[in-house]
Image (tube, rainbow, N blue to C red; front, top):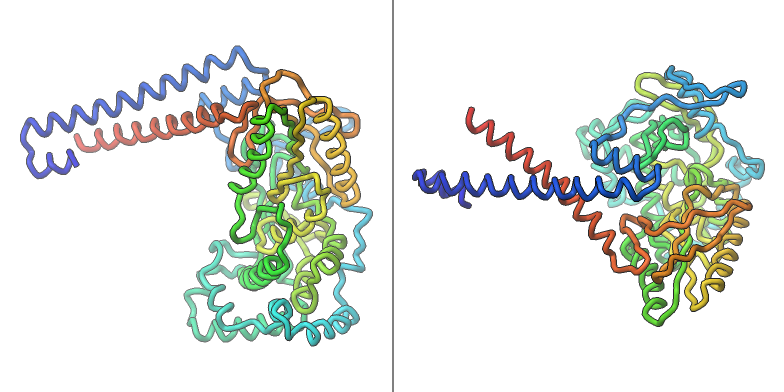
Length: 484
């Protein structure tokens, strides 16, 4: 407002006031940045080596490059680094695509005429009920209309982008898509090209070492038309899950559920215990490549047995999971097509919903759940009771994971004791003791031992100060530009 007045009334006094206000703002922001810098530097003498490098990287504003770092590998007992794109791609293919699971029954993933004919009775029998219409009704004009202008404009292996479809004659494209989608929906089969996915590799944020394949995730880039079809089927699957009151402890990917609810559930359970003089302990579990480790045959069994999904919706999901082909793409280097037999394909629309259906039957003691972020909480007056309870919960989840062919990452699974004591909880996974921490960032919120959120406040203030520094830099640049 002051700047506007100065522009309308450019008296020397008004200009002087504006310049003084601008100077005071810049000085205030610079002071806040300097205080943050000093506070972070003072932490260096109190933290371990791992945390020390994180702070140094933060202070020096180092960020991970968009490209892939050289991959470390042991060859003939010697540690070597791979720099060539083809060699790096080969290692990533081995880690993300070629991994196998002895329990995978490929017969369950092949959709043959017997499977389709045996499900025709499901369509006829269920079509009269509400859930039956969700699973079997023909795709409507409204659903096709809603599929336009969805998703990114990145083209899949077929080279067709969303803008090409959206900018074409809308009426003709609408009619073509409705006919195409309904033909595929009723037959339960998709063309081979519709199951091909280019997998781009991106670094996982916050990693200490980017020379391991596990520090990267792959995102599936599939056909634009297939994504629109997936949008319709994912909306139907989500409606079916809401209709059957899906897993009240799962807070991810469904309407009216959120990470905030998962955080509040965890915090309220712990806080109630602390207010009554109890202690609380929690184990925050982490899976190794959670989405990419799903046993598809086990998932299909759960979809039909546990949720009653049948008919055309089941055919569609079965086809989505079967005979998929993938290839890794690093910059301009593209690998060969290879069969992808496990996982729900991160980056697809159906993948997240299928994943939460897969983990719905983890032990009841594991709650709340937010996709693959699982928590076990125990509250008691005796710390030994908490330790015993959490160890039992951990063993149950480990048993479930082994049965499903998934792996819990012991290095990233953390244990935390709430209530002010400096004691530790000795929780083990396969004779490996889990690390005890004094704070943990759970779904974006930093939890501290007393749940007063002081660490979260400092974290938020640090982000605000760094943002303020960027703003002050912009102000300086604008100020310099005005003089010219």
